[in-house]
Length: 483
Image 1 (cartoon, rainbow, N blue to C red):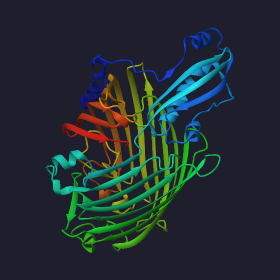
Image 2: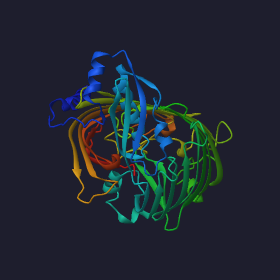
Image 3: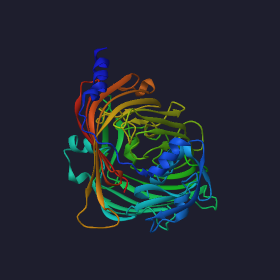
Image 4: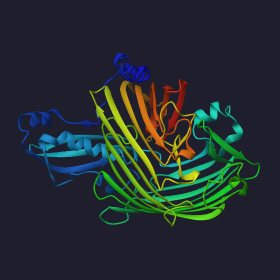
């Protein structure tokens, strides 16, 4: 019980953190005349005489208007005017097409308004050298492999996030080094006149010199490495996208993966249950349906709102054996502001694989991608059923705009925001008795304090000092970007 008390203490530490925060700058500006009308006659309506959009040099106007519930010629309730305009601003910003979205209202007459939307477009074409780690995260590469530069995969990334001005994205990756990767992906969100349907397609080819083949009882990874490439995969993806409203998205996706792995992986010395197929060369189809609900102030770093993600997938053709699996992945994230400086969040996620007798490759759970407990970054936990909850209390301590000396239309200033946080995570991972490890089939809990640094294009660096139930502690770094 003293450990839970410690986690609770960590979770409340933000209550005595610094009070250096500034109020966030308003991005919806109303004239005083209109504010007087809202105060004296909140039951009326205002006619939208015009909507003027400025700054969309490449983005088509219809992409911006798609995110507005009220358009030119509509009447908007006075009592909800600010909320409606802020909602439109958030939706436009969450397209990830703009680094700044400001909405200003001008009075056209006593009963009509002009809405002025000022935008700064992001840099859409980003050809750049690329260096990626072949490990699960930066912390593992730095500590476990002593920042070994030979484990870096390098190459070039070319990405255009607004190819024709219709929010369509194309990306090309060409990588070599520790691993080899060639990838081409294209997504266009709207292919019909009503702007409710889209498509996506991609192909990826990978070769690797090292393969994770098993998890030890101590929840560490075992790897098999060869000078020549040990495996190669060819991946094809096709998706049908549906977005009828503002907040709900649906995705019907078909994947086809061609596996070819060195025969020695299935040897008794390594992991005969890696695939459960009896062969290391096979084709695996997968069909999935994903339902998303996203309503937040900022999709990249939310402080208010909700996110729901539900994915149901069928892997393989049969129902048992081999790589066959019925998979459910679900997550729910809830963010709520306490005041203009403080906010807290609660996140829940779960993964289920059926039937419970699954090959190693289908049982990867905690420790991969964003499915982890903060403080257990150096360990992985396999499971056929798992769940996690995360609690975070956050306080903004700085919101600055640093002017760029060289004048340009893309980056007139460098935003810098700092957030202090404390957090506590709990999780549980179930696996069959023959696959149990030290951390499976038991309650897991971690906690810590940290600092989030948010800058241009919502690039986020997180510095976290965490402690887990094994009394392991340390400082962890995580970087996310949305270029």
